Image (cartoon, rainbow over the protein chains, first blue to last red):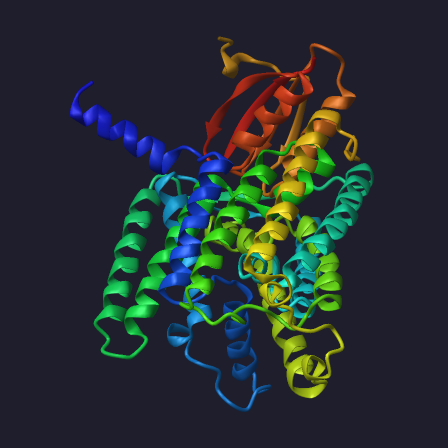
Length: 388
Length: 81
């Protein structure tokens, strides 16, 4: 094999082929740990809410201008993810504007609104409310995990009903396959230029934001290459029994939890970072609503975003309604009804405060291990498969 | 290897514009209605279908014959077990 052929082979493996969920899960955990070490925990909804606030401000519903999206860290995390996923989709020639049939548009609107409600109650989507909450040793993460499982079960029931009663056709794709590698390279250069600009901005947070932009672009790239999908991880055990994604997600969750626990023990991040006052009612109910909705949407918080970057119009609609609903509801919950101060939806519970670090590590490892064992056993026996 | 372009499918399923998991679910459903040995052709625009459809076939025991990339969509061919 010549050097040229070897490089070509590498290009194919890294930029064109899909990574296995195990490889993707490990890479995701690594990037999540690096991001939290560098600056802050990963998240999705905070950025969406910043964009939603700009829309509300634009139409005159908010009096004060929200923070600038390029200088607001939550927003930068989402921009990075979109960049990474777009670059991945373009280089693999998988980018294309996919226009869904009418029924899918209606599903996208309803699911988007419900995802906004669920993520407001749980103070995060499946990333901030579940994955990153567990990783940051917050009890609310476990409550949302339970909620998500119940919700996904309901969502799967709906899908099975829909498939019996409706047919929807008439979608199409506007393909840009030929020019997409060029678009990918332009996006890559723009990303690097953006990061360079942050590092040389002279502002206090410039370097932090620049690093966060690159790390979340890595997250977006890895997620898209893997088609890493927490909807799939929760859904398939019920729908087909398939557990490959669930196992990759469980492994990822365990590794990230271990890494971030060390970060918190070392005092690099404040212990209460990402420990949300939604344990357990907010996280549980929010999880149920969000779980059911994400199945109908075909994407969770992060999964919707990388599909947006791939050109799936259904997920564009989902994310718009998701962001606006979350923004409006959280505005009322935080400022008008003051639900968090009143403790209606729960309290902040930092697991190490109750069980110590060793106890927390054992408990969370056990919860994740149980999930792994359950999906593995179910894959073999199909005991909980309700699909046809 | 079968020459895919010469295959005349017994049934064609249009999943263009649909996102995960709808193409896979609809394919599974459509296969139920076919007789053993009949061929289903699926049109999908979701890149995820390239894993999902062969994966589902393997799990269910159907024979996945392959796919052809057309301008703007991909054609998948499946022979029912």
